Image (cartoon, rainbow, N blue to C red; front, side, top):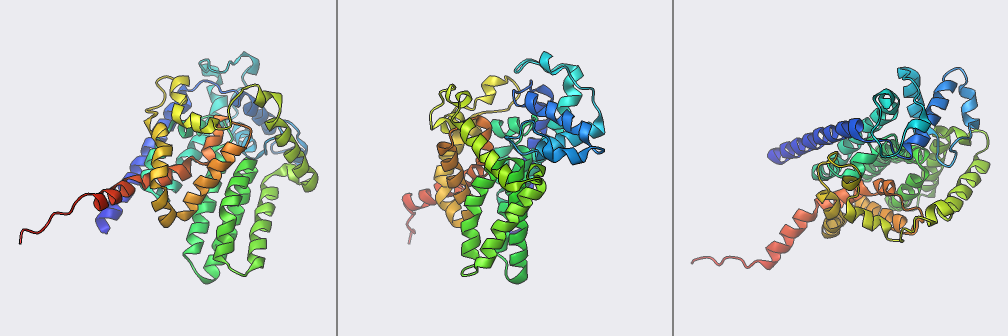
Length: 370
């Protein structure tokens, strides 16, 4: 037991170190992404509001389709570091990042790199092997190394899952406290990017209901505290939460059915195609170590799913809910994969054990000599 625990710790350390090294390399080497050229100028606008004009933040209406939490974090970094603002119209998507702009991009990329590496550490609590798979998975490495929205809400999503998982193994007051903390983490993940709240909410609520049977006050409290945390972490809700919710829903529905999405012509199963393509290796030659993990992830997750269902059921349900959401949701951008990659990695980590179990059943046993 002690040897197995030491081996697990060693794998976790390797995963975090390898993942950090991959993301540090990506921070330095990746060219500007389209979304970075949206979020980073907004970060500079937030920096100009901090701290003297912070009261204007709730009414700031640039890029309101996405919540401000992550962009505010970038703005806080800009406020502290004070890098010169680039001439945004001179930067080109996919072209090398000029040295003069690296300070500005670093204010978004370095916080995300730290958050992406923190995700690996959190995944290693569930499965060190899953963390190792995720460490070198190129979609996760890319979108947690650029100034995108996925890295920070992903940390809160993982915290919510781990807290619910731990709560279901606890009893008494500790069980309730952990569930309420998970609700706060769930609301914070939604305040980073709204779809995280949908996927993780649908994943966790059945476990909360099952873990507290015939206690509707706990169920209602979990939902209410999640919503309160969302409002607390999303300043755009402060001046009118109902109107803001209606605005966000209307925008995302219109955007997902609008010309910008439909003209791409991506099929309903595009997220599965993204996984088998490992596209970041083609987009950014020499930046990422391998695409084999990406291409094997879904088949391995399918093989390991039955064992994950028994051993880590929340992660297995997360994988199902996440993939269902990605297939149904009309917006098919590859960064949406990050909502489900940790769960797929945990399921995939059980594949070797599943294969070994099948082999033990199929291979003939040696008969004793006597």
